[in-house]
Length: 301
View 1: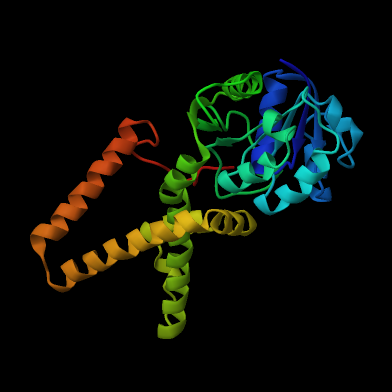
View 2: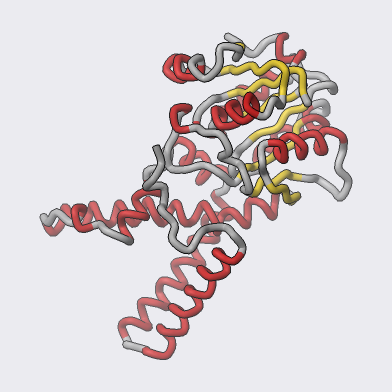
């Protein structure tokens, strides 16, 4: 499919793309640019044919596809380096969780905005690092490809084929809708998880009771989400802050409603809220976004 692919950043997502690209023979040559010596040492064990770039230079001009798998706080620096060497024959895509700010960044460069196709694979776990990457991570998972208008150019179609080869299901979306949707379905839940764990810690300190050992069920599963990479999530919160703040406001409003229903022991209203939540869970399972008995990553190795 490609002659040369370059993966910039090889943590969980980057290494998973790497492994799938090798096993599915998506490219003749696969290059990696990675700063972490620890990650490089691990990646070298995956396949002896993997080639490494020591820096972003003229070699990137030979890459058919460049995939950015980096923290959003690194985009500005990497894009500045890439734009010196890429041409219209290159294609760039990415894996970031927010899109509007990155789109604004690439729109400033006439060349980049023609070859940079933003994408977001909805896959991963709370783990980080190439040692946790795996084959088939993207199989039957959604991948959002950002489109600017109704027409798809050749670069968009090649990026679509790439993700389909990795096993992803594709949906096209604009960056504004993307960031609004994921502020609710992903960013707010992570924020709640971090805050819930903090609340448990504060409660434990104040009451001088060891409550963590009783964290079966609810707190345990929230703590899995809260174990996600802190740099990545700081970047997500900052880059999508306006949508996330709106989501927080809706959440706080609904939390106060729940608080009143509990205080007043309003049986009818509280049951209505709880039953509606069960219906959403059923929908998620029917849409094959989860299984009826999820293991929440407890079987990961």
